[in-house]
Image 1 (cartoon, rainbow, N blue to C red):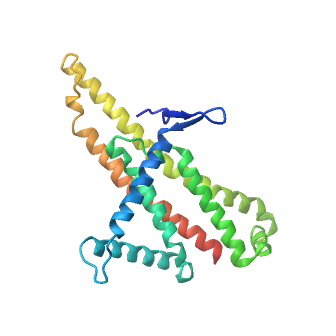
Image 2: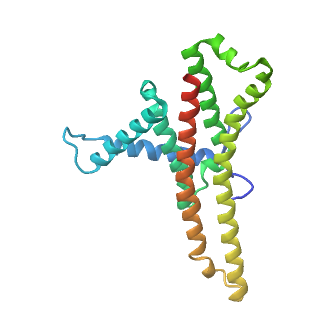
Image 3: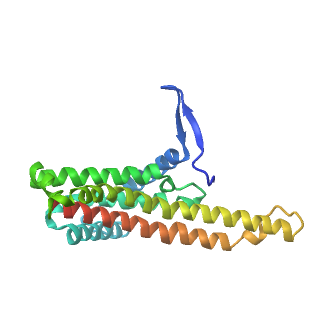
Length: 235
């Protein structure tokens, strides 16, 4: 796992060569996992739920309730998108537990999600209130606020993308540095032994914290912020 950035796994021999990085490959892995899990968890559904189906239906029910409470009943149609965003972000963040570089440790991934949210804000705001009202909102409460309002509009996706990326990438850096430090300490204490004896345990605990706890929190935050910003633009 390189601190400097994702490695190029292979190059597609088209358009002069398109590099395919760890971020892209691991994103494919996450998407494949989610698709397979969706197929497995939704097959043979029963009218009277039991077993895993009970948990799945409870999770879907909680998702729809969260979207309704946060955005309003009239925006419940955002639930599938918010659920997908949360699961994709969470699974991407958890890649580090399996020795893979998290796709969210690449700014391209989080910036893409933030761009989608930004476009949703503009589209649904214009759809709900009209183009004239949307343009007018940039000059409220007084026309002199236009530069600040415009800057605030563009700073939203930028801050969201950097927040998510920064938290996950910092975890990658710290885990990598700790692993290397304990491996070096093992070699120093045990006279060149290459097995990282002193690195067993502590880096694993750090990895669980950064990948599991921080990963869940960041997935929750980006989902909540997306709901709040889109709902505010539509209200």
